[in-house]
Image (cartoon, rainbow, N blue to C red; front, side, top):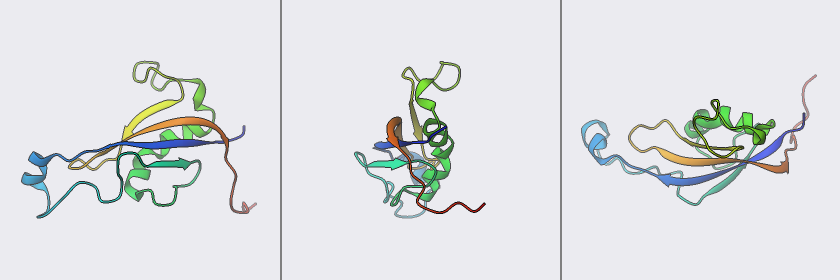
Length: 116
């Protein structure tokens, strides 16, 4: 099976002021790495400039979409309405970033020589 790129669009960078005031470090502010409107293309590897922690949270969805996930909806059709799409977030509870993942027809290409 061939792999395709997945488009990651940052929809919203949120900030929970109430929780941040109670639990956050002094001066905590919204995410400094991800901004609404940013677009990344991903496949097997984290895109350049993408937050490491956000990648850990969304990788499994990217992997599924990159390997033919454009033909199904996640979780038995009781989560997302559109096939090939997922709305996900990073796991920062004080300032979560919300992203839309979409399958594409853009072929993924390995940029390294696999070890065999």
